[in-house]
Image 1 (cartoon, rainbow, N blue to C red):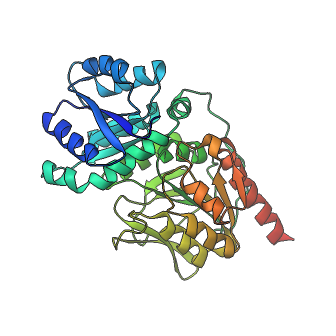
Image 2: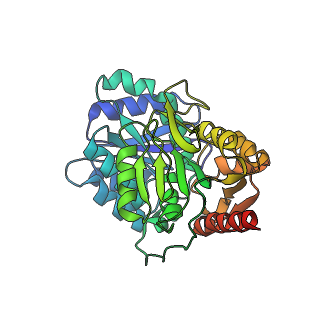
Length: 354
């Protein structure tokens, strides 16, 4: 990849193509090499310009965005950033695109598209930078059909035991790989994935259909129970809290932390305070440093902590920062994180019974 990130924008809306061009060309390290109104035009432009990143509308005429993405990731894998609408259908299509190998997505504002997109300029630029660093072939391989692995076995543990996970770019599929093998009697799991409002409910529902544990979008004040996974709602910070002897979910829409809401640091720091050595923490693929300081606090509080290794990350940003700060007890490939988490719960349970 050259020092300047070459971007090809594919969208049937001339307005969106124009706005994306203005946003991208205003950045010193990226440029739009071409735009296309549909995938058929885009095919020739990809061959002509060899872009580093493709931005792709999810719904377009002449060829569906998902069909085009599936062919692209099979024949010429490259970093793709989806541009989605903030609707139920848009969120479901976007999650399918992430399964097929898209690195990340940008949500179009529901109203005031011109002003809204320009407000998103910094975020769009950051996502393009992350996409340019990504390993799209690995993302495509993760989405490929595979024989389901048998569920891991776990004893029924104290309700004090809890698993805490944070992720960003590439995280939706990484999270699936971690929680899909968990047994129905797994310790409770709290997850913060950087995702806007309107998408986390669809994400939780998709995971719930795939997993033996129950997966849901977290609600304020609900009790945290074993065998359940709680996803931080888009645009809300999620914290682990206490109500008497029970863990409960706390939500707030306070200021962004590390430019994110929900923030992984917010969740990890609350776990350090409330759960201490009863928690196991994992930081997965993602751009930036959100969660790194929080993982350090979890480790200092006695939690076992894990970072995803570089080879299996779509973007080795957040785990790299956590490792550099000394937050990770171990660095583990994505394919082994689920078994590693459960193994740590086994070990902690045995130690407490001795």
